[in-house]
Image (tube, rainbow, N blue to C red):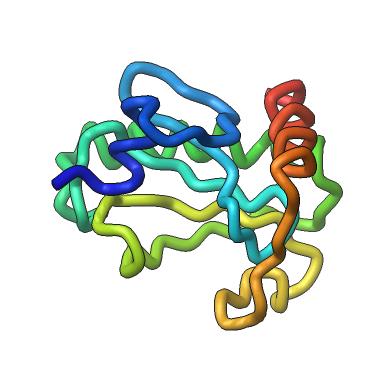
Length: 130
């Protein structure tokens, strides 16, 4: 059964897309821990990041780096935190989180609940910064 991320890749579920190429996709997390929280995924459905082949792994990280460099231009922050947790969806995903403090990347705190319009506005700012 395809994961929710595969359904997003296939266009079955909408997303607030940031960037895409033939192998990777970046889109906003709809339950972010901070404004601009972005997920970066490979289009191949692999559960565990270290099961990706070397080319897919390095490509994913280079794609994430490109997106991470755009985030501070769109969402003011001191750093962009990177984490790979991967327990909630069995599809490799990298979290990019704009940070001004360590609390900004705390996944146990209550999630933000931005409206679709707010997400669309943030996604547009990040896309313009790429």
